[in-house]
Image 1 (tube, rainbow over the protein chains, first blue to last red):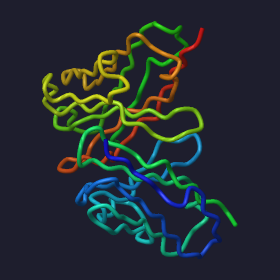
Image 2: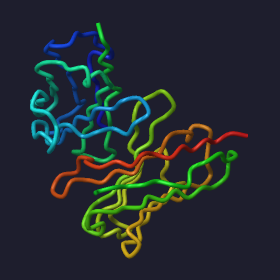
Image 3: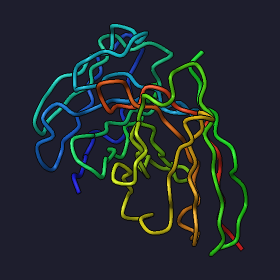
Image 4: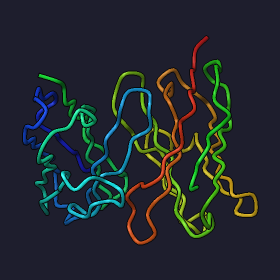
Length: 107
Length: 121
């Protein structure tokens, strides 16, 4: 199975900060990577697919990059609504696997 | 509005069976792969199963943790996905989500609200 490792596990930041979350795959997944945002008690919400494609309706402050085994999610200017947990997911090979999550907290 | 609504969760004893349903609306259900994903209490996400648009037996995929115990199926005439869960274990306790895949990409763009399954005596 492909292991997905996110870092950091928790991130403390302030409104307006630039935030970067990293996701590493245990083997190449080319660009088959998605990023999701999840708020407490809610289902995850797709932000980015195919590593860098912005899902319709998602604010442009979110961006994704990377290929192969290393990927990043960047929030250019953190907003109050962005405090949540973020997950990466590979869908290159079954079983599809998620990272353990990165919780973005208010500093 | 594109929507998925899960139902069928509840409290079940170890070794028991439960069938979850996922009712779809607002899109052409038969054209999309649909997935089951679960979330353990207070923890991360685990992919459970994918059933492709055709729903044929050779195009249904399962996580090793549920293979042989869970069966995914779809009824395109009813716009509904099912997850038959047998031989349930305490470690199957989770919120179960169904999630629709994008048309030409397998990322999950629409999720249901989730249904809680608790396996406990």
